[in-house]
Image (cartoon, rainbow over all chains, first blue to last red):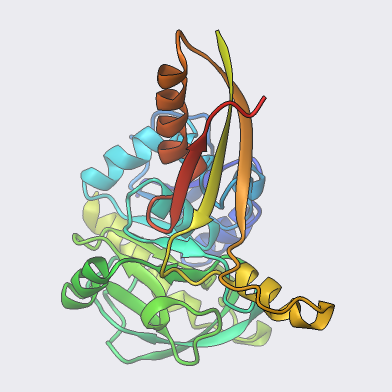
Length: 223
Length: 83
């Protein structure tokens, strides 16, 4: 089993949590600095949360030009599982690997609390083993988490089963209560909630385990 | 030649602009009445080396579309001669 690459941009801050969470699930994971241009040694990739390049300009706007992103696009095209969590989701939309954009929360506040989610589609590397309609409680931690896109894109996402997670009680003004989406092939997923922070019921919730387990199994299948 | 240019980036019409809306809501308390359609945005100032102003503006427009704005949610306008 080859390791999952967890990308580290200047300003990423959730990379160690992700490595630890994947390790808990028996999956080896390695940190990969954003200057790397060869990702051929990894069966899956995670773009973790944080503030890549200080979130200057817009979250993800500068990270999109990091040297590693060319190889991320290649991996996406090859069908390798790629997961963007929070800031990683913002980077994937800025890079055009996922449609739409994340704008500032409607209330203009940074929101950091557990929220209730529903699995809206099982057609993704993150949700393939979780039944549609399953309720999960996972923390969010963001200022720019309101998903937005044009009408045509939204219709396409809904019809194609690409909306993978929705908020039960919309915290940020996200279109269609969207908390996470996938690309058409289902191998690239972005979500604002942090599954790596929901790994133990002793610490509030273990609902992130199933999602990350699904991702890990997908990396093995894709290898 | 060097041309001083400005790019203004605002959220597109139809995209919620919570900062603009919050500013607008605060205005009556300050005694401003009759001020509407407040939009918040960002301004970028820079100089471009180019043979003429049209070429400089073309560079600025490209830069604005590919980096300074996210066309999914934002509009960018180039303004020339801001020296």
